[in-house]
Structures are given as structure tokens and as C-alpha cells.
Length: 62
Image (tube, rainbow, N blue to C red; front, side, top):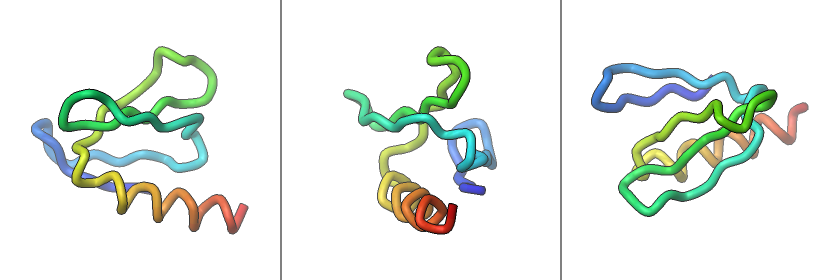
């Protein structure tokens, strides 16, 4: 579970549902989810390194 805070408050993402990640042109990066390519969340760019480290660690365990 990846937790972060944005303008809407505390948020959480279940790592097992992540399909792919892409950087955006703004101050966010987009996380897309398995099942529907339209399901995505924009996360503040300053959280990118933390998210990628957690995703890599999760992937190595599963």
C-alpha cells in the first residue's frame, strides 16, 4: 500500500493493482490501474521516487 497526501487529503494506492506509471507534463505523475486504461490517479511529482522504490520492492517479493 502506497500512501501519500495531495490537495484532497490522505490517499492510498494498492500496489497490486498498478498497471503502469508515466510522468506527466505538470507537477504530477500518473498511475494507471489494471482492468481499465481510463482508471488513473495523478500523484504529486515529489512522491515519484518514494512510489517507485515501494513498487520495485513489492514487485521483487511477488
